[in-house]
Image 1 (cartoon, chains in turn orange, blue):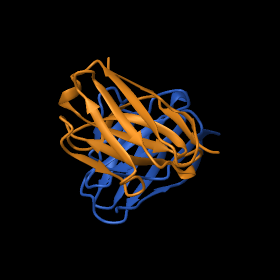
Image 2: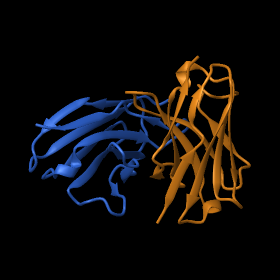
Image 3: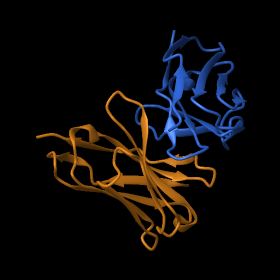
Image 4: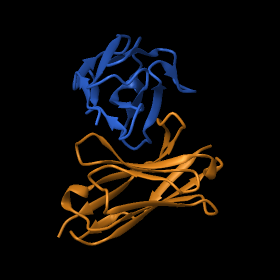
Length: 118
Length: 107
C-alpha cells in the first residue's frame, strides 16, 4: 500500500525557515517524480515544486522560486521541502504527492499545516 | 500559465441523481486533464486522468469527457460517499495548474 506521511509543519515567524519531510513507503521511491502541492485555508490547490527521480531536475512555481528548495533522499525514501524567507501568504496545508510520468498526481499524503505568523 | 476555470463552484444534489462538473482551460491542453476528490481527514484521491481514463479503483459511475479546452466530470447515480470537493488539474505543461474547486453537497 502506498503511503506518504508529511511532517515538520507548525507555526513559524515571517522571514524564518522551515523544512518539511515526507516519508514514502509501499513503492520504489526512486522510480517516481515527486511533488509538493499546497492549499491555503479555504482556497484551492496550488502546485509548489516537483523533483525528478534522482533529484537532478527540479521545478518550482513562481510564488516560491528562489525561496523554496525541493530535494529527496532515495536511500531513505524521503522527500523534503526547505522553505526560506517565509511569508504570511505561505500559510497553507502542504501535501506530498507522487507524480506519474504524465504529470498527474496519483497518491497524496494527508498534509501538514504550516502557519506563518508573528 | 494555463488558467483552469471550474464550474459550478457549488452544487447540491441527492443520492441517486447525476451531476456534471465543468472545467475550462485558457488554452488547449489536448486530453491532459485530471480530476481529484477531496474529503476532510482523507488523502486527496485521483479519480480520472488524461481526460477520460479512470484511475484504478475509481467506480464506474464516474466518467470524464472532453478535449482541447472543455472538459466534464459526470457522476451518475450519486452515492453518499461522493459528496465532497472536486478539483480539476491540467497535466499538459508546467506549471501544473488546478481549478478553484467544486463543492458537491447533499441537497
